[in-house]
Image (cartoon, rainbow, N blue to C red; front, side, top):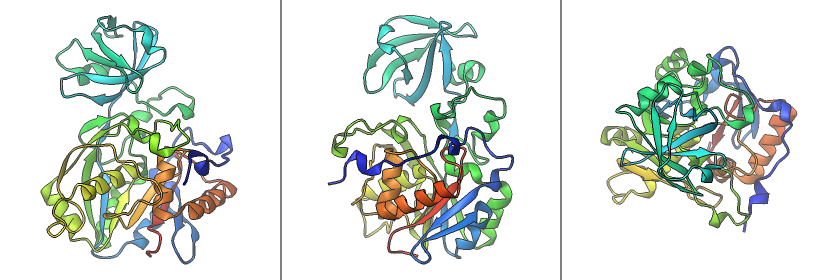
Length: 343
């Protein structure tokens, strides 16, 4: 049985990308397939691996400026909207903020603490008619803590994909950050189709795993949608290429909850939350190829790519990436992975 320690690896701190490259499409791309196993390419080479009839699936969720300061000292990062108009947010020493307390934000608006728990942090309510308008005034882009810096003006653009539409994510679907309008046009010119599905990224994809026994880890839920029209295109694909682990998780969720496999070849239409946790041994039903960034040691995302391409293969690929000084994490380089056993 695999444990958390099986997904650990050494990563030099200098390989963590704290800022993006000047051009989105300048990133390197490590290719892992059966023969040869590892190739050093660039993201502009992505289209060379496409075939007519492929469907490339992107997550078009837009990042909310979800991090803000309350009462001048409490930094809160929102991660999940609730059906009753509230939000869950992470905050250090959140237990000191008792339910019922009202906090003031930098623009003079207020939030109220509704409840708290150790899994999700604080449940808060904006005492305003338009919470997103408040966040646009006072919020900052929720850059991952490993960047070890504050938001800069350029992050408002670069920590957002060029095709982002519906607001809802507290972290960027980072594999999509490499794509430019020109690269999207090149995908279509290759004879492949593009489908933009939506998964609002919450805490589930990046919260640390704290239990050695993986079965004890609880994933946070995230809301996603695949329309009937999108499902039809995906089901008629020769191959499905997921751009990012968030696209992968939504596609595999739509396959997992497919109650009519005789009708839907890969996925059924989907509009609900998912807390899918993919580890080695999982049988992939929807995705054939995955483009993704390099992920943290012991993370659920490294477990996902190891399930898809093989743990020994990913250990070898990451060792190669370290030796060749690839840039890691959200603003880093990417890798193109083929499902183990498929080319």
